[in-house]
Length: 424
Image (cartoon, rainbow, N blue to C red):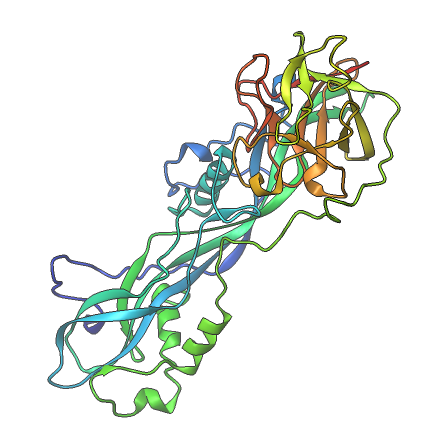
């Protein structure tokens, strides 16, 4: 298609990529094998597989598992342009934004932490595509395309990419009962799950109604915006821009920014006290084999820290499990502090932040105040703690008096996210 490929560019040469991106949902199995054409991303090297043995040091870690991938060609910028006899040659056309794609993993409109990067790396490997693995977005402003028009005709000038979306799950280490009644630690698919959005390399070009292009390609998607079946597509036009077609207008109205979410933590309000059903037993959540444990703050703007347990701790180091449920061997509970009467939480304004500090607030019915607890085999008190809403694991940067308990999207890979639940 000589008319759709430039022979000369101003300042640079560009060849439009006409690769077909078959729009299909690819169902993923529990373990994902990297495709030969996958990008060389270290995040795609998944060491954990469902059913594989893990150790107590893995209780505070998690890994992504890709459950589905959908690839669809998407036009980000477009302009209809009519070239008459005598107006051929190189022209620079300013296109209008059609769609904006933002990279996201989970409920927040950004990519923070190693879990998100690992998940996107696995997406690229499983689909055999070079996808964005860090936060970025396609431009939401008009973009210029310089093109050499060699023949008169009705052209669609476009920029586009392959939008990649799908769902993921979380692999966590937890105890599993074996056929003989004994227990072992294995990687299981945990309750946490979500969706992701990313995109591939950007492409730009020009296409006409009469051009034959690969089906399900970015060029074919641009060709549909020309509305070639409409009478206006075959009518005579003056040289220059063509008014947007009905499909272009419809697509722009339907456009919603990707990578952002209106989802909020489920709560009845900070003033609403939850009717908690707490166990009578109280526990310390301690660093295994060491004296420091989780200590709730006295001040509202302070966080949960590693503190020594003494007779002066005033029960700030004592926690009760409330509204406990169990599903597939994983406990879910609210962590109520005996000393200050508050519930452990990740503050809503920091929910999307890697290394956000764990705090205590008035107890409400709120997923930010709910935690999954992964347990070692019976006879061991070791656990891993995961926030239900953010999916992040609890841990600490270093072992020191006063060190904050924080959330880490993949947990602490050195094993410092494993704690001991000790009855008091």
